[in-house]
Length: 456
Image (cartoon, rainbow, N blue to C red):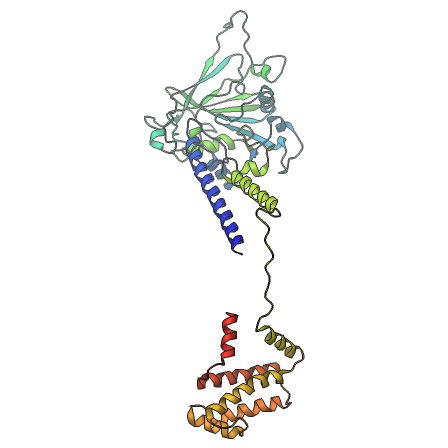
C-alpha cells in the first residue's frame, strides 16, 4: 500500500511540474509574439493585435459573420461545408494584416474572379499584396507606411501607438463615412495614393497589367477611378473602387479594427461601415492566418497554448505506466501470509451463526450470564440468589432504580427461557445491560481487554 501511494504521489508531482513548465513557457511565448512587429490579426486572437473584439461585436450586434477557413477557390462553390454554409453565400470577404500564409497566384486569381462577379473585398493592411490590388489601364494605387514599429513597442499602449498623430476626417459623405467625424490611426499607418496613368507612358517592351488580365480575361477593361473616403495631406487612409460587378475597399491601418485601437474615436463605426454596407454574409479570412479547416479541429483551437503539449506528455506517461504495470522491476518476494488464528475469529463465526439461525436468545444469554455474575458479586450475594434481592442490594449501593433493574433481569431471563423476541429487542436488552455495567463502573475481564487490544 505504501508503495502505491509513493507511485501515485510521484506521478502527481511530475504532472504538476509539467503543467508549471508549460504554463511558464506559454506566458513567455505570448509576450514575445504579440507585438506590432509580428502582429497576429486573427479573429481568434484576443491580444492587442488581434481582431476578436471586432468579430464578437459584429456577431453580437446581429450581423451574419463567419470565419472562413478554406481556400478562396471555395468562394465559388455551391456545396455546403460542415457548418452548413456554401461559398456563394458570402458577399463580403475581409483580409486583415500580413497573413501567416501568403496568397498564391491561383488563390489571388480566384478571389479577384469572385469580386468581379459581384463580391466585396475588404483589404486592411499597411502594405497591400500586389496580387490582390489589380492595376487598371488608367490609374495606379500605391501605398507607403509612415513609420515602422520597433521591437520594444508596447502594442497595448495607445499613447505609444498614436504619438504625434492627429485624427483623420472624411473627405466626402458616402456610405463608408456615415456617422464618422474622425478616425484615429496609428503612427505606423499607410497612406494610399491614386496616381492617374499618363497617356503612352508605357515604355517599349513593358506591359501594364490590368485588372481584367489578372482574372484571366482576354481583353483588358478600364475601371472607374478609386474614391478617396478618408485622408489628410499625407494621403488617403480609406480608398474604394469598383472592379467588375464587385468592389474592393482598402484601409491602410489594421490598428483601426484591432483590439488595441478599435475603441478610439470613430474607429469602430468605420470598421462596421467597411463590412456592412452590403447585406449578406461577412467572411473573415482565417485560412491564410494559419487556421485552415484542413488542420485538426482540436489542435487548431488550442494552437499557441500549452494544452497540446500537456496532453501529449500526459498520454506518454499513461502509456509508460501501462507498459510497466505488468513488468517486474525488483527481486520476487513471497506472498504475505495471513494469520488466520485470530482470537476474535471464533466470536465472529458464532455471531454469524446465531444471526443466520435467528438464535437471539443465545446472544442475550451469553451477555446476561456474565452481567448477572458481576451484579451478584457487586451486591455481595450468591449467583443463584433471586433477582429481586440482587436488584435491591445493587440499588442500595448505587443510584440505579431497583424496580427497573429487576424488570431488565426478568426480561432477559424470559428471553433466555424461550420467550419470542426479535433482533431489535435483543439489541435493546444488550444495550441496557451494557448501560448498567457502565453506570456501576464494572471493569471488563482481562480476556476482553486483551481481545480489544488485539483488535486495535
